[in-house]
Image (cartoon, rainbow, N blue to C red; front, side, top):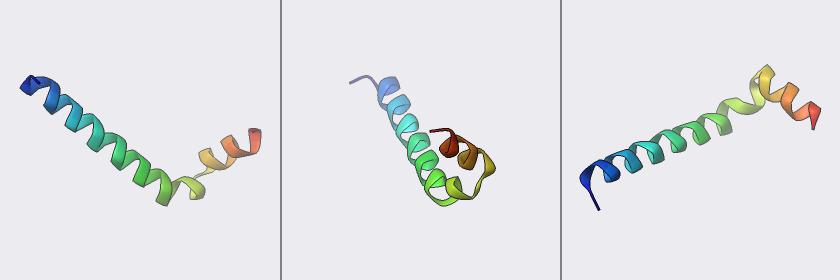
Length: 40
C-alpha cells in the first residue's frame, strides 16, 4: 500500500472518530440536533 494512501486513510479515520465522539458528547445538547431529530 502506498504511503500517501495510508496517510490519507489514517487522517480520515482520525477525523471521523473525533466527529463521532463529538456528536456523542455534544450532539443531544445542540439546537441543530434537536431540530433535526424533531423533523424525523
